[in-house]
Image 1: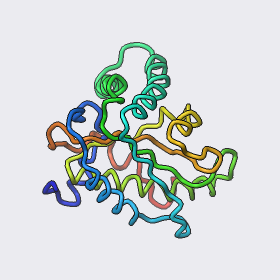
Image 2: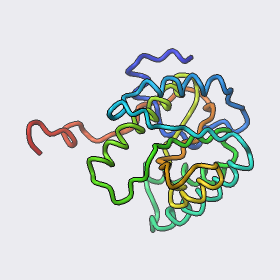
Image 3: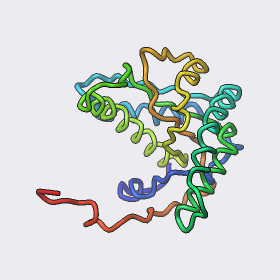
Length: 206
């Protein structure tokens, strides 16, 4: 466990792409600790309709990696023109992850029961309100144990194919992300650069 205050944990749980240790295995018991903490997150109507598919099998990670790259590289190409500053760093990091995602020792795929295409916004919001807090709790717990994570969604463009790879019943269960998980190279992460608070906070009206 890293010696992080709650504020340090919340402000330094970064999207880690380049600093994932591709050579060090992640112990199952450590993942289970993080997942037990994820279960303590709030869930809409106490439904607990979440599932986490933990993928460690190299062949399945390779197959998921191919789906991920099929979307990642065209997405990056559509960016057009040279990128500068933080955007350039993020683009480089995404390319690095695309090149190595099959080598990341663990892929965690948060899922929820049900299909939500064409459903009302309140129902969709309720669905995300169940799974996202649980997934973020998992990512915070991972950070506190020296693991790095990043929320990705590229593979969802091929969700049905991913479901076939992993035996997920596509018509009954929705995947919402693919979270690469690995120990980090170094544990010193800083808060990210953000816009001024008054650019996003609205008191009493927009």
